[in-house]
Image (cartoon, rainbow, N blue to C red; front, side):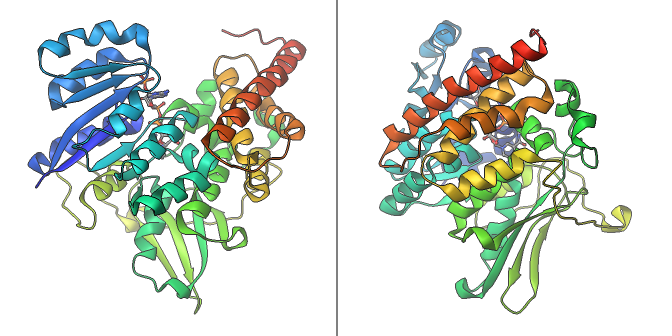
Length: 395
Ligand SMILES: NC(=O)c1ccc[n+]([C@@H]2O[C@H](COP(=O)([O-])OP(=O)(O)OC[C@H]3O[C@@H](n4cnc5c(N)ncnc54)[C@H](OP(=O)(O)O)[C@@H]3O)[C@@H](O)[C@H]2O)c1
């Protein structure tokens, strides 16, 4: 029987790749729901190509573009809850959460609450509400398939490990476009330079997060929640070739690692066909280790990448701190991409927001929403202070 999927964020970098892979899997996968935020034109195209039962668009003002779909038998849902509606469609078995940012938390919880399995690309849902996601998953006895390449790699290694036999998880990081440069050298880097990732082709936010290494900090928190591993047993190594996607150190000192080309379609396909491995039916480069020649590993430089340290500290502090840190990062990156603040100010905006954040535990989803809203306001103020000092003035 076909696996019936809903793809949230289908118009994004990951979402488009999910649909590319689905197209090669033929009758094994049926697309039942699709959702996006603004890009109604691409959503319309995708709906015509994949014939889902329903589509959702968060931005109400764009819903007119999707009107013709109603006459073609597709339900159209518009508004802030559209992704949740697509996450809970009764016929869906697997929800692919490929939205960017905090917006991923509510539909992830909704999907798990409705007993669906989740293929999770959206790391921010675990960063901000990891406790809620894990509780919802346990209550529903649902599965979460990690799609982030590092976590997909760890999941594959852990699948063949005895639970008590693991000493340490090691996430690898490419180091991004500014690896080896001093902080002062990149303080005024442009958005184009920050987004020019040497290995991965990704959405704007995650590309900037990779340039600051914030992305790796978010991924450590993601690993903490996905794999129930204490903080001091999750490490990070810089590995510029991005061939080893992550490693597990075992109790006897042996290591298991997953190696592959840097192609997000691989973890996406595995999440769709798990536990089976399929030949790729799309053109993809084969990993040729002899032509790569060498694999390098190094410890991350805390001085070069202050955002990495901020993320780890927020993760360890727990409670609402990671949600505050995440919101501050989303705001800071947005302001940087709009050329309102320099690259070198990103860490300062996040630090100022965290410094003022009240302590608090996560009682429920509303607590996380309140922390997110508070942090967005505070981060916007901090960014405005920086902008008035540096007079970048925006685009
Ligand atoms: N790109 C990668 O290679 C990669 C790798 C690992 C993990 N991830 C993670 O995967 C997630 C997606 O990343 P991406 O690079 O694909 O981002 P992206 O290219 O910016 O795409 C984001 C997608 O989410 C949609 N979206 C955003 N806010 C929404 C909302 N409020 N309601 C409904 N849809 C919303 C966007 O719709 P519109 O197009 O209409 O704006 C778009 O479809 C992130 O959490 C990222 O960290 C990405």
